[in-house]
Length: 502
Image (cartoon, rainbow, N blue to C red; front, side, top):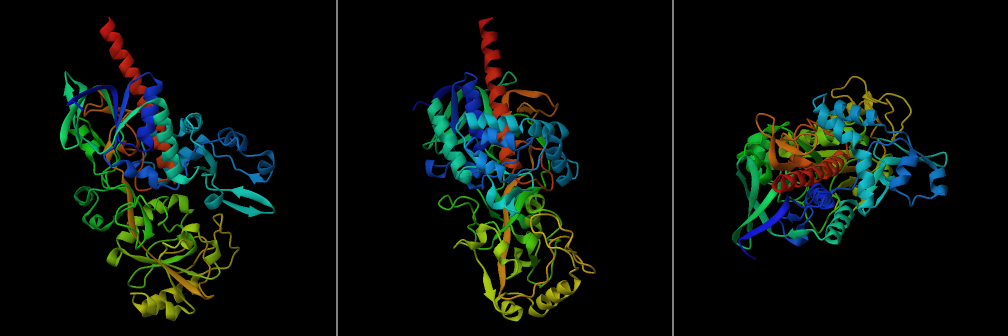
């Protein structure tokens, strides 16, 4: 390989956002190169590790069936599918981010979500109904809830397998173990990118670059510097290669920082999960997301959040940091036998760490907690539980009275053995601080003008998520802005070529 190569568009990264960018750019007539920092067996970025849930605005079940045509009339007859309109999606996004999400970026994400799903279907991505985590059976019918009825076939593994198959089909080149290190900018426009590959430095001449290589969550120093010192202790849920390379290359050529640099998406995950994503165990298997049915206690034997504040989809991305704040960065989800059958599939996997005992006293003896306080907290909680109908698939208002923090929904007394404890720690997914990017994927400078030839997608777009996150929005944002960035880059190439002709 020579030390100089030429492509129309270079995409940095090889996850969902990156490959959607590459495909869209190729569709627009560009000659495209994808750079993957990892080896082929570790390709796919954070997207590889997701459970595939993807949040989309849709009108009704008929709209869903257009992207899941395999759904038969007989199956459809037994499904109750509430509408999840663009306004619902936008309102959820604004509600969980405290109104901070950039309205232009948020509107673009929401309004382009369904057409992007349809486009992905055209590219060979298969979707299925999210039966397992977003539905329940009542009166013989399957009721969906929570605005998240669609997932990719075979989770993130299937999504990436199908995207890579489409990339190969289109003849898009991919370089593995190729780290982008520097953007080249001349005459106020991008003209190339420097890549470290096979222990040599290669300059790729290109008219445009799409940065889609994630945020800086796998960089312990940057986590500590921007999010807080305690974040050095967080484990990394996804790829080890998201260390902020793309963000800082862009800043070097004049890009503007944007979004919540002190914030991130994080969750409560198994305390024995690997410290970085294990590509041999994909599919988000270590998360522990049935906590709304639990009470969570720390090493001091005290509760620290309202476990039932909202549906899991709207609290899980902020509760990881609450676990991180606890002594030893650990907490214990406590369940009794009444709710144990309701827990999500990940609680039954062989990788799940748990303790089981016939009495609460015996359970306390198995845990490194203040045993007296642990038992006292559970007793106080039990006394505070109010009467009411317990409805695990909807906000039931069955809460507590007289304790802090309260439990607002799904409050059942913990009294029927055997009892279970699942220890969790904090796993970081991605950092919210990134670049200022417009609604077509163009990276903006400090004067909020586009940097010619520079585009971004996925987690590199700042300003959409603040403090929290509606479940399934990350994959959707990656796909929406990936497609937009790829289309914009191809159009930019056509414009440049027209200039040369004239």
